[in-house]
Image (cartoon, one colour):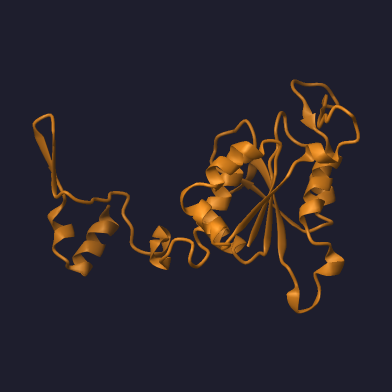
Length: 222
């Protein structure tokens, strides 16, 4: 499975995507992460990717064509997607007004071969880019959380993480995907008792019984 990040700040993304479980999944070739920068597709000598907004307003807006061409560079042309090797490709567009991204959406994205995540910056991306990209592949529009971020990189990293961990072998055991088992927000490990400021904190007795039905019932209550 390939993730394609369209971003002006590859270094900000790659630090996270090269570490821990996601980094190991990349090394073991369970997933691939590739980058395209709109700066490579501008037609000016300064590498300028933004312009003042039509109609006035604060800030700058990312130009449509560099974004469109960056996405296009990461996709397999429709003419080459036929036959037995048909590739499913999806483009993810971020917007605070988009559908809130959920675990169900993450499961759905595992069905695609290529997931392209468009990371906007400044005041956003010229809306015409989204309309044009719909001619290349399916476009899904998501919000990740209710906050507004400086750029699309943080939501993109969240989606790569959420989707990658669902790919068989990435976590080692499928049971490690919390939402597929009875999980609790409260977890414990050794030692059985810890002491802080003369007060002792113990692991709940039910977790030490080995009685799986009682443990599951306790977790559901949590």
